[in-house]
Amino acid sequence: MKKRRAGAGRVIYLLAGGVLLCSAAIIDPSSVLRSDSTDPRPSPGSTWPRVDSFTPAVAWADHTDRPDRPDHADHPQRRDDVQPSIIIEDFDNSDIGGFPLTWKAWRGDDNLARNMYTVREENGNRYLHAAEDGSSTIIHKQLSEWDANEYPVLSWRWRARVLPKDGDERIGSRNDSSVAVYVVLDQNFIGVPKTLKYVWSTTLPVGTYHRRDGIGRPHVIVLESGEEKLGRWVEESVDVHADYVRIFGKKPPRKAVGIGILTDGNATGTDSQGDYDDFVVHRRGTGS
Image (cartoon, rainbow, N blue to C red; front, side, top):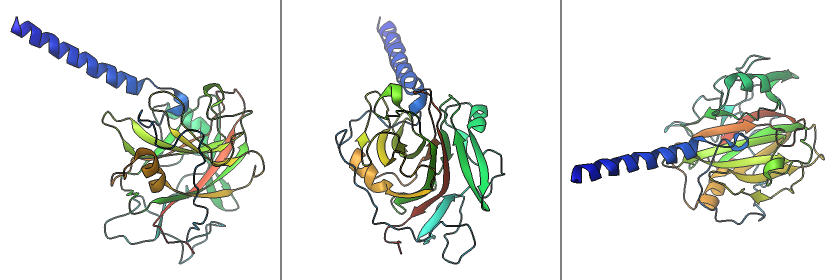
């Protein structure tokens, strides 16, 4: 009798574990990079603080070699590295017309990702172009060598070309963004990423913070909105360390998970296009 009870207990334990793993794997494709299900400290709809006063040490007007430009590195930093700013992706090493090196589809189809994301060149500068094809595929780059405690600020450039009609990141049926950047500094015990998602929204005001109901939804922060800057390169700089601490109530681990990119229009069934370039991590106080 005791052996039967012990056997039944093991079966129940295995079934419970299987349910947990399945709940992590069965996810909505429009929000594949996930955070955990813990409610964030800030309330949805609150205004999110910006770091507009931060100016990266390098202006990204062009890609000419300059002594003040941060070095490109496959790994953002080493223990003996004291650089104020380090490039983690500028797409310069990827072939024009091809898929960016070291990037992959996140829990998606690599072939679909290759159709959506291609490297282009403009005025001698290579960048990533994204055009939604209905698949809503996120691509990601692993960055386990990035320590956000030492390099807490992330900057990049993006350009919204076509905004998804009536896109609203708060509503599932309208959850589309012309350009979106995911930052994953940690994941929970079953491997579900804790995700910050920075977006250029069609309709939501700049500074909007929201997290939709449901297990593992990303924490969405609106950096740009509407058509005012449509078709223009815009540089962003965010203190991802401060955002992570504010939401999750603790410092991130020493090894980040990575960053992701998504341009989508599948929820609204409308066109969505955008460009990305020059992802750089910075120490605080490195502005000019």
